[in-house]
Length: 80
Image (tube, rainbow, N blue to C red; front, side, top):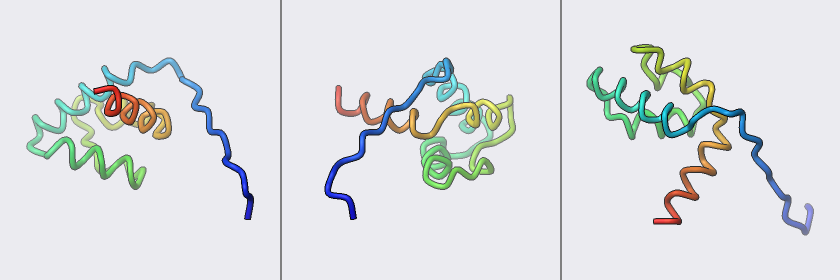
């Protein structure tokens, strides 16, 4: 077992995370799902079936890098 901490860097792919999440959130809400539960399920499992195809939400969500998404969410949470 290593006794050092590994450094993890996320490289942005140029996707507007806030815009994608807003679009996916709205699509899930419009289809009657609980958007927070569905997005958390996707983040934890990387199973795209948690996200509806409605309005292209699933393909949008799959463009986001999960590591980058988690990093941004944690940063936003800690900055509030």
